[in-house]
Image 1: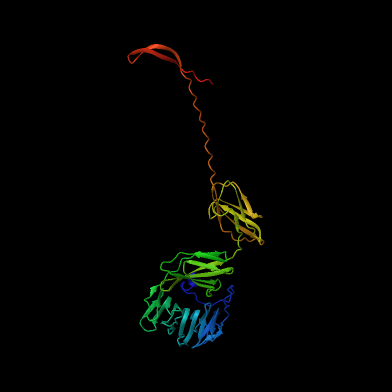
Image 2: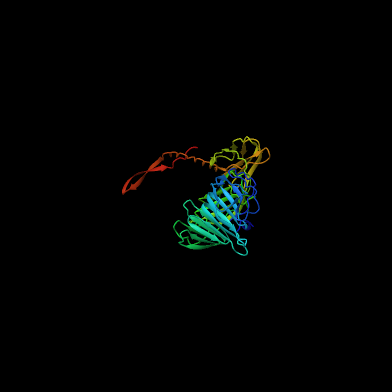
Length: 434
């Protein structure tokens, strides 16, 4: 379903909604006439810093040949041609109308000049032919009879062209070469050089499925890196309007940074950028922001502390907005296994008993007056040590008692080494008295 919404998941073009979304730096898009005057380009919507003839540009006007738009870093202008084609222009840079006229075939003959910045265009090919749409940059000329494409001019004048549907013929300004760029491919033109042979655009990054819930003002969401990707473009649009860019950032790593968005529904688009600066197919996912109040700060036990004995007291700093607290204790970081939970705690502490030796994880949340709950605090851990084994019993050693000397009973004649003599006969030693 999302693929149909975003036109092959590469470009998102269409009318802008005037719905406010809390983006303070962008002007609201205002209503505009349904169709432009023949031989002109209708200004459908304007956001941010965009000027025409030194004046802030507004929706509802028309551009004629010779007019030049200038947009700042936050500037975005959406244009509509007489036969229904659309062009979106993002600054910083300038976009001029060199030629615009409606043909008898109901097609359009238009030439735009992009000095710097980025455009995304949906050029309709009339049933009976005749459309000719041209985009000139300082180093190239792009020509199409009908396609979905994007052109970006960097401050160095290097120009990239990426095509989602149809075909675009790209020629360098010095006529050194020309290439046909078909759907799913892109080319780059450097100053003084022929266009690069078209290469396949990177596939769309793999993001989450379903709806990502964001409950903090600032959050980082990692996603799998794509091979050959050197950067990623992240675009966040309000849920009611795919064409407003509340966030349009280039990230150096596969890590989405979401900050300071008001509560609401959003679309998130991410495109990988290759080594040539070409942006690939865009992944489109949904995100819901519901910023919850900050949780209490944990106090004791200290993180990764060691405790002795089967009990512990968990304490945290009081939350002035809380009417009660919720505390959770578990033996796994996901809190899905063996765990305990206490609700309705009036004091910022809980005494826990009957703890077996293990590593424990704990966290706390506040319950507010309206019944809502804050986010849970960051998880802390502590270790209940194994109780030490009792020492072995000492062995009692008995001192040896001296034996009583033997008593001579009598002397008898005997022969010792061939000579006669007397030998002593001893009586057995008496047993020791008890």
